[in-house]
Amino acid sequence: MNTPDTTTTVPQWPVPTTAPAHDPALFARAMRDMRLTWRARGILAELTTGYTPGQGPTVSELVSLTRDDRLAAEGRDAFRKAVGELRTLGYLSPDASTASGVGERLVVDLAPAAGARMIPQRYGHSAFTDGS
Image (cartoon, rainbow, N blue to C red; front, side):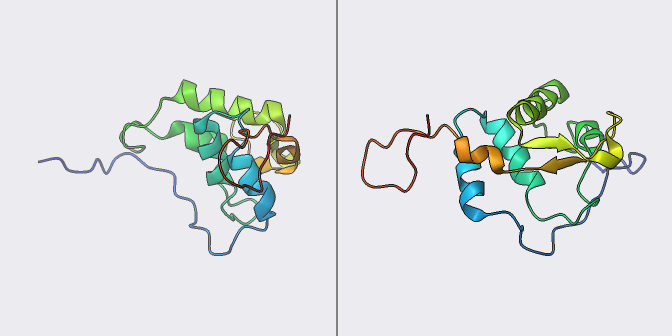
C-alpha cells in the first residue's frame, strides 16, 4: 500500500477566492494563441486564475514540484521552456520586487493576446479570426 511521504514539503498556495480581474476576451484569445504550446497555455491559465498580488506561486515553487506531486506530468525542463515561451511573447514578466531570477514571482500581462495568431475560421461563424 502506498502511503504519502510526509517528509517532503509540497508548496501550498491559496486557492483563488475571487474571479480573475483580466479581460475575458483577452484571456480567451490568449488561450487560443497559436504561437503558444498547449503546455504554455496551461501555465498561463494557472497563473491567471485570480491570485492576489504576491500570493501566486513562484517559478521555483512550480518547478520544484516532484513528479509525484504533479502526478507524473511533464518534467522541469519542459516547464522551464514553456515559461520561457510566455516570457518571450510578453505574457509573463518578473515582478519588479523579485527580479533577481530564481524564486521570482511572475506578473501576467494578457496584452500580447491582442496580436495573437488565431486558427483561421474554416467552418461556421466565430468571433475569432486569424490575427496574422
